[in-house]
Length: 111
Length: 115
Image (cartoon, rainbow over the protein chains, first blue to last red):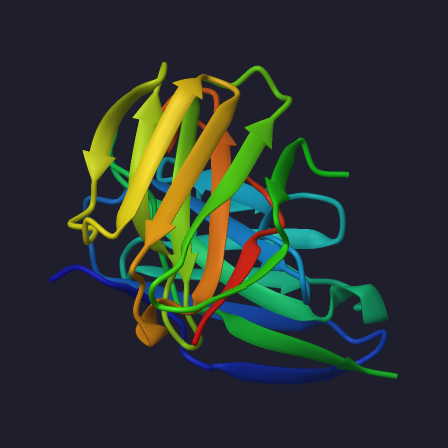
């Protein structure tokens, strides 16, 4: 079946450095992708999204890159801060279908 | 501050108990969802309501019974649960129920432990 997954379950980054979280998806028809952040004891929060007609989108300190050729999505966080420590999920959908979520990557920022 | 409020935040219940989870959204959205989040598993969609009508039941056991009296409130009634039902239950809302039409807004979840 189709699946969304993450290359690494955990990632540790020194405070101030940039971090990159990767996500592989298998449904080539997916046309909309979202990154969510879930802090401990909280629900997932929307970070940034991207549609399949784009390959890059930037937000505040975050950039999402989409490579449709290899079905790969990444989230780059610049100048990481302690508050960036969380689990990050990618999610995909196509057309009007429901979002499919990955298992998540736990990002730890080392002071 | 989240526009989706869930109560209770924590619930411990025995397998013979009956309890309910409550969700309220203050965002004026038309669609509401229940998700189950277990350790090391992707978020599992359970139910979707659009304009108070259930539009999706993702093969959820009948011991979970949703109720949506209006577009702002969603309940999950629990009865005769199993220990493997222990998880974080997340409520979410969106403008509409189409997955590609916008983001989901999540509540902070109800942590359920079944003894």
